[in-house]
Length: 503
Image (cartoon, rainbow, N blue to C red; front, side):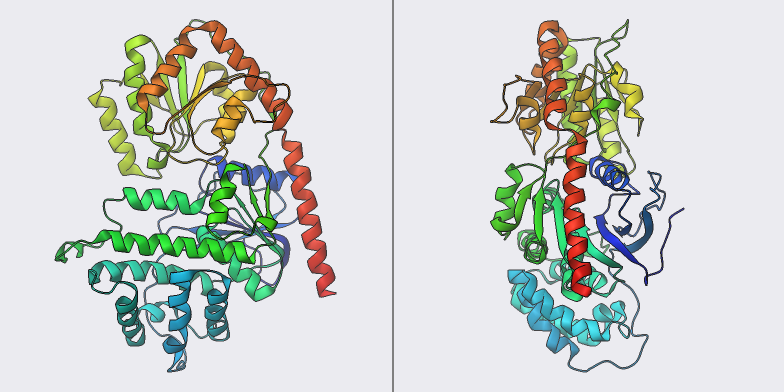
């Protein structure tokens, strides 16, 4: 069951999450859960942005200091006008701000849109904003401006999705809070910027991965962006331009979020260059590395026993984790370590088509006896039976699973994404240097991944060196208590500032 507080109740922190906690397991969700639990003196309200088919089955037991959840479904709304007649010039007034927001981004054009919609919110039907005749006329004008001469049906579906979700976020209920904290940019960051504009209360964002980069990868990889049955009626396919519209939209959301924020936080320094490229002010930026309670894992010594050498990828079965690359690495690894076993430990239901493609690849390489999908598991119960952790992701932030496995002495072979390099090979200012804790490979290079796995599985002295290094690095640099104290200080200052401002 989910809990929903009355909208009139004010929480300390409104935590804005998109497609993650508490309904999807994973690194970001686990981070959110631990953050809330570790700060029981603050009352949190969750604002969860969800896909229309999201199953509302919680994957975590909500802490007692979660006072409620507000759900916002991201999908183009249906329906038409339900309320009183609206101003005839509404779309004429919206058009300049919508164009400027799509083309330039930032908080000022968003402010213009919010100021027009806010007084009418109780009268507006978001479906009418898309499905009315004035909405259609606006779409035609925007087509001529944003994609002149391009394929009209592509633009129709692109704008319908983008504007539908924009209107959904700007018309959704806004929980009352002393401060607002988004765990990403994107739609969560867009909602955060709106919250700041409407309440003038302080807001912060903490990015694990860079949202615009991840969406850019997904949009580039997508064979088709829509599931419209009439898409085949198009006479030409100039998808590149519409893909740019999507990318520009997400850049616009990030820029608005950054400009609204009191603090722009990320979990490792490499992300900051991307944030600055998307419009973040360096004066508001800071790095707060994630930590873990390493004491939960330090006693889980490797129980090799009579079992075969075992590797594991711990993560969601989705394209951005490149599970197919992991499977290909397993096929190469088997040539040198024929008795090796591999596990994929994480939920498979998020992208069922991709999961089926992975299973097909396993059958293609005849790996049915080697590779097992376990689904979501209790990591503590498995770490003692894993020799090497593997990450083949295309994009990551700071994967906590490297730290959790490392606290148990399990080395990692990971692609060179996010903070993986500094966690595995050490930070430049590490004193004294602890040495490698595994290996870092190029993205989409199964042969490199397999080579490093062979080395760790067949050279006991090298495995021991890497195991010792990661244990010590986690204890010295990634203690969760540091994270807790830092956020306690941030929340206290922001909540007091707003309370004093109201007094």
